Length: 454
Ligand code: PFF
Image 1 (spheres, rainbow, N blue to C red):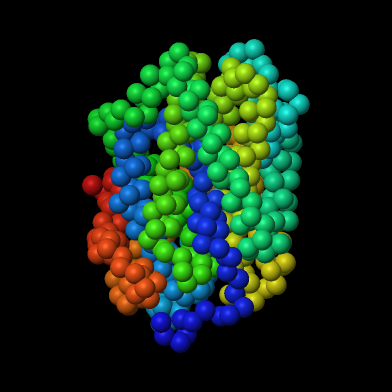
Image 2 (cartoon, rainbow, N blue to C red):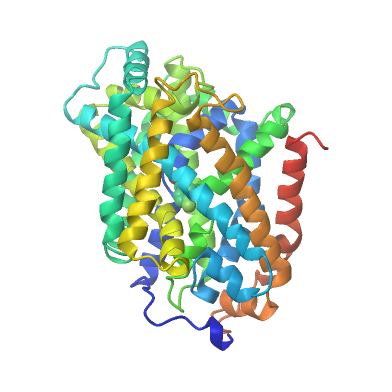
């Protein structure tokens, strides 16, 4: 490592190795797995989407996480600083702007859905989610989400909570909470999964999710699956890069990347197995969109003995999982404002929160009074979701893979993946190959396909 790549000693680091993994998993696992994955899979034909998604996670996702880890820990910098340190005269650092814009867009619409989870947590706790039929659950959610004030206020409250945690710094709150909550969420999902498999039309649901109908694979499915892979792994916007800049020297990057991807994928598949049997059993359309999970889950809980307790606990954990994700996406712009623009952490955090509150309100109102306000045929909410996940994140991923594969010194890549030669990392050639060829070609082809050029 050359001198200017040495870490500034004052920079915070994760206290433990497990903490580093739990925190990256905490960033990756969130609404993306439990809310977004099922509705994207449902809208894009189930098994066909799932197959493309898995393919992208392993062929592009894992190598790109490694690339972000290498740049992050190798430079101990935020996304701008990382590119600038490694290519002082190049324009690569401009990719940082993609990261900032994407992180703020995601934070805005994500907080709306996180707000829904808080509302549903409260409703479960007071027993208001105990309704007689699926139709009631549909109407219930519809009335709430189109009601303007409540969704907006929950969005703002959620962002305020996110603010408070961010003000406490990097290691303390996040690391401790992730260590406990992620395993709990996992166990709960397993229990729900077993329960869903006993539902009347469980086999239809599982068939829908796991049986790929190749004729359904088209450009929308491919782009949707690529975007979902990036979104779910928190990739392409410098989030994993920023977190890796807090890793200590002993963290094994290849192992952490693979574990993060595998755990994240397991959670997504589990939530698919929870949702689709219920979708078919309760007669909901799998293509219902962003509201799907909130309409279906309460029906599942309703059927369980002690349903109120399960559902309260679930929405609480989902809320916490969202929080660990929003914290990580906020760190991207906060690190930028503090390290590049020399703002105090407090000012940077306030700025991040205020922007997200304004944009988040617009997203919350997209289901109510701003529902008819459309840009390119999409509401604020869907536009932010679509542009960030399907365009900005894969573009950021394209840049980071080319940069790590072709531009940086091979030695940095090797040193980071082997912790300066302290162990052998057999898959180094595979990661390098994917970063050089598979990821750039794959992402470019999906883009060209989706704009109709191939
Ligand atoms: N990966 C998170 C999820 O699946 O919920 C969402 C996310 C977190 C996206 C952090 C981007 C990010 F920087």
